[in-house]
Image (cartoon, rainbow, N blue to C red; front, side, top):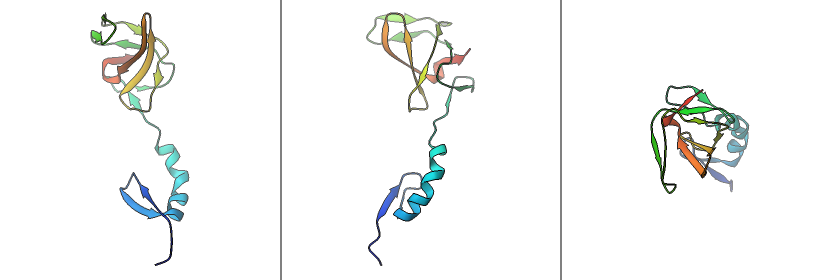
Length: 103
């Protein structure tokens, strides 16, 4: 067996040769995009407006966001279930996608 470098492929869970990983590298860049869906299945993207479908108590802010509250200009994180947003008086608000509906 030759002295060949191996890398761990997270998608298959196996060790593959570096040459195979380099050849495969171009195809995985599109596959790495995370698709975020709201409570009804609509695909969310950066800058969308969403509406809350449930009253949510915000930890650390001592405030409750009521159902029907409009959140403007969301930003997607790397997680498929979390969205980052701004709301008056609350800094660093992260909402779960299961509690919002695209407007």
